[in-house]
Image 1 (spheres, rainbow, N blue to C red):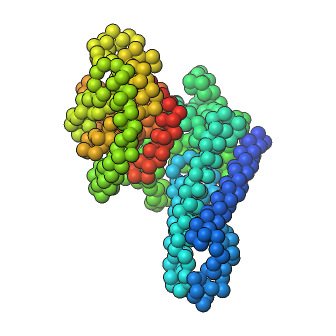
Image 2 (cartoon, helix red, strand yellow):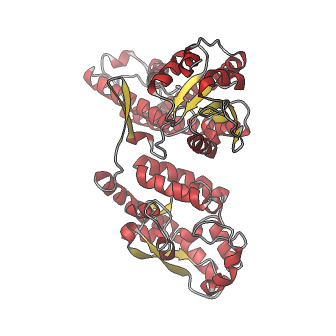
Image 3 (cartoon, rainbow, N blue to C red):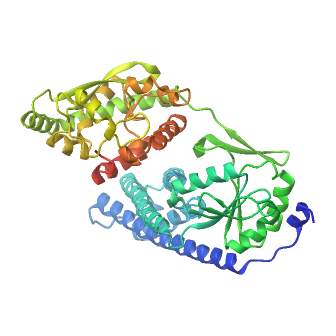
Amino acid sequence: MTSATLLTRPVGVSTEAGATGALLRSRLRTYERVLMVLDLAIISLAVLAGYFGRFNWVVEPFGGGEPIGSQIPYAVVGPALVLVWLGSLKLQRCYDDRVLGYGADEYRRVTSASLRLAGAIAIAGYIANVGVARGFLALTFATGTVGLLAGRYAARKWLHRARVRGTGWSRRVLVVGDAPHVLELVHTLRREPYAGYRVVGACIPDALLAPVPQRLGDVPVVGSFRSILESARAAGVDTVAVTASGELTAARLRRLGWQMEGTGIDLVLAPALTDVAGPRIHTRPVAGLPLIHVEAPEFRGTRKIVKGFVDRFTAIVGLTIALPVLIVIAIAIKLDSKGPVIFRQKRVGQGGREFGVYKFRTMVVNADEMLAKLAASNEHDGLLFKMRKDPRVTRVGRILRKYSLDELPQLLNVLVGHMSLVGPRPPLPSEVARYDGDIARRLLVKPGITGLWQVSGRSDLSWEDGLRLDLYYVENWSLATDVVIMWKTIGAVMASRGAY
């Protein structure tokens, strides 16, 4: 029997796969309903905050004396606004399970729905000559939008913990493709378990027709391309993820999609293209073929100018606010050990240009001389030297490193334009001397005080993972991403993850 025949043979719904998929869908529906109730509560509180903040507990009409508006009190407008706002979130598909729990699209949709509604109300009020109190709208939508984002963040953290614990909130995935691509996709999905995809098996070419290993790493090989649906049914999966393979032609994939209709199993195509952010990807159907357009990275232009302005402005504000803290730290360093307060080290910035990075001194003055003797104790792979209990670090230095306070003087580097608030880790010249072509792409943007490496584990990251995160940022940076990273930096610093 040919492979094409097997792929077109009718397949019934798997009891196990159907039950697994039904359980997951039921849990996701419950999660969506909880999100909706949470949003309802947050919006209601925002409307009350906007009213009391604007009118100071005084009951006011809606229209500020206008004939139409004076007949509609805020007691009516408030509940109506709550319902309309909730409807706006629904119309913007803010409860779509494909965006819940992972990525920035969920936050982007919530923000878009809120701001569009605020604009629509302001325009409608102006056209209809209804005097909506601008203070009420501003307070309501400002507090409501921030509250909605905070609520989504808290709900997402709960969902992430549930997925990491493996309590049935993740999709069970069967990966289909050539062995190297299967292993790569498995590694990618396992790198971020909170995304909600748990690989339980794999199908590779002719796995059941030749004496091949029945495992790829620790992933069991449960079938071949001749038995994809049967294997999915036997493994009890609810998602089939197809990656690159020369044998999976367009016709075979189309037949596979047809046969998966009504089985309760989702089909996901994973292209070989990785580490590209969503905003750079656009799908355009041409002659029935979904072409994926990938925009080139942006290394200059208006957004870069805005980023530079925000960096410098924030650096000025940060230095002003942190001045008392800087003075206290400087005194503590001076009392703790001999040597200068500020440590200036040569680093490599954008375009390979060297500059001096400023940090509070956290080591003894002869730390460089001691490095050769400690080389055998390096606990980090790649080009970096890291020790959890480095004898060169002073007592005050350990505290400063734990909470990244030693990096506060780098705001001066941001102010003069050597660094950015967010970017790749600033490398040493000795590291750059050993860069190959791929790693050198880190030098296309300014290094940052914080970055994806900082919020993802810092020194706990392997060299490969740290490099991957830096390159991802270089290729996919955006102002919105910078805001998210700076927000996450606060949590990473307070938790002291990977700080030593």
